[in-house]
Image (cartoon, rainbow, N blue to C red; front, side, top):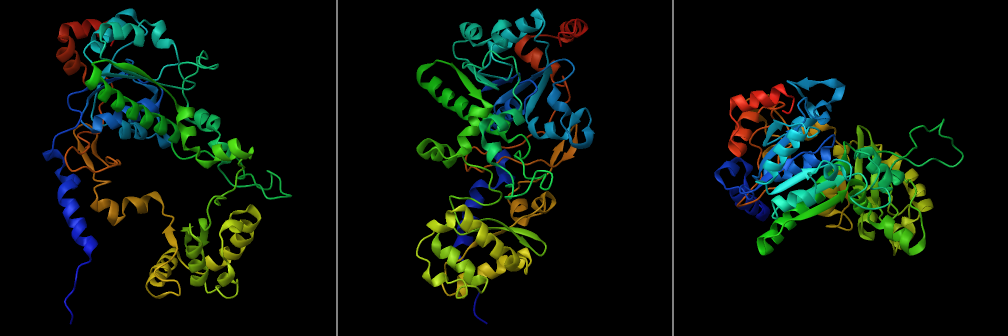
Length: 449
């Protein structure tokens, strides 16, 4: 028997894993462990997501909630709660110290000023102008702390014709206003009505994606501001509107309208910028098929055994296949063919074709559409530590998605999952303001914390 020879990529995988294996994260330093973040976001996962990214990188992040807890703690499927916390917030409470403080009370605002005077970053999601009305906006706080970076995530931004509206930032509003939701969903077939196809309506993306995008852009802006502060010593204000941030992902639809006045309508799982590029049925569910180049589309037709019948040899450009009528035509031809196989069988056929097909090594991309439970049991993600349970002293063993990137020197990590409302009042207020049990008892009695 011939000796087994490991593939070159295996050597590389072993090498890079030895450098960025998440199992070794706690042996390494944290990139932002010298920063103090105050997260006073309200009713919004955008602020929580933003501070999660910073907390995963080691920033000492203090989550400030009203005495009864923030509304986002109640976000949970079927109203399920772990201790006092909804399942959604368990994902975004990680690595944060949790204190209570009533910003609607004058004394609460004075305490916040004292904290902000010692902080590097403030993250807030109140309607534009609310923080200024309370006397704790950027103008006021920057006088106390010129190095402060003050990030606001709102529905309409700090300026603009709608900025005066006292509306909180809601994810679905941001999705709708971004125009992306208008283009997302199944198309209404000609001659059909919405009563006949009630699913053919604008469709929201998954859980609060606009909030996550707004939070991610805010975190990016904060890190850029930290770098600028290192150069100049100056802090600054950062202004993010969730709809505006999500609109940034609208890709070619913006340019298509700007260049030709074309309004991108809903087109289901198809895409007029690429072919082959969509989801198609299988015996046991469905797969994503990606061609991207003419040769890959031809290869897929060959995999289906239709190369000669459909005249693939004569195709010399992808352009016609990007038109809606051509895509409808070929989708109807492809559906019954892919339905003859399971998702795994189609994936294997693409792999085999890359080895010995007519156009090998060219083949199409085939990806099975999997449910969440299958993703969480996927060996690849398990090996990369994506769903390693966190042993939390309060909430027990909790599975939540770990940091979304690996790093060789200063990797992000989850140190604890969450904290109950006001859990860290004693530690934070003593450490930053010198408040002992007597003072905390007085503040609690007055409803300030």
